Length: 113
Length: 113
Image 1 (cartoon, helix red, strand yellow):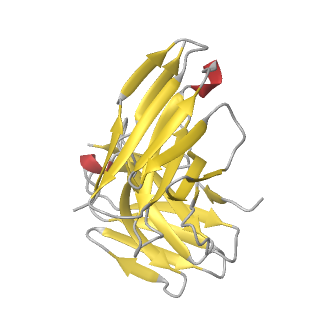
Image 2: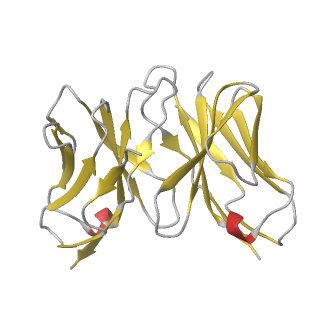
């Protein structure tokens, strides 16, 4: 069966420090991958999506970037974190058959202080 | 822009009663809808989906109704249990080939004893 892993679960970083969040999917090939951010008590904001290795589309201009170095690996990065980057970051994937259903990881709670 | 939204931010339900969560959408091109459940500190979990060529679909203790005339979607939970306490999101796909979804703001369901 397919599973998705995100780490770390929580992260506290100082302003100006770099960021790297990792997401990996197991049990499927060539998934579509997505990064979302969720502010407290709010809905999900799509940040990036990828339909293949090295193919990244950005939805919202911001202080973040994404990369997909391998088929089932999706990385969210920042060179210098801002206070406004705090939030709950979620990775999701869809399969090659049921492309509409996104399956989410457990998320990373990022606090920038 | 077109969006998906929810009528009620918080729904308080007595244990054993039925819950009804509503969602309005404005994009008439949307052809696929999903309900997600998100427990505190976790990623959203797929509950049920429905295509625009259907008006009703049933799962285990859940039923989704779609009224395309008024662009309204609802999720009914039968015999609500304490474990149903969570935030519920509706999401729509407007035929996007990359599987992107538009999420509503969410409804907090609180189950009281």
